[in-house]
Image (cartoon, rainbow, N blue to C red; front, side, top):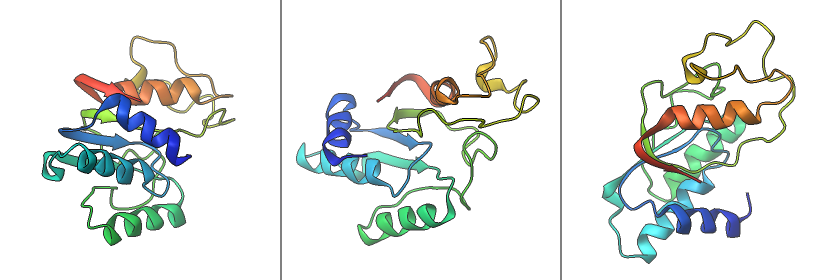
Length: 150
């Protein structure tokens, strides 16, 4: 995700205090930018908690390293994992969700998978041919009562 887009998201949602979550965190750029936002607005880094998840093992390791070299503490789960099938934070309710999911993801599940998933209870089951709706529903399911997503 371009830095300018990530910076804009941070400026829009203003993640000063609470839990920040990225369900497809890649190398952790959303988290780094969140802390830059906090620093530039004279906030306190201790007022936030970072949660993320990444599907690709190499990118997951890169995200952990990216946070570590900057002295950022975060919970990216024990292992790399798909947010739909191996949710590393099943009970998380985040105050801020910053994400750039892999749009137009094709055949992300089979016809029989995740049909009774609680994340879309009361709504249509996301189609198998495109995961955009599933990403939106996943993020909504992770928001706290007054949470903001961007």
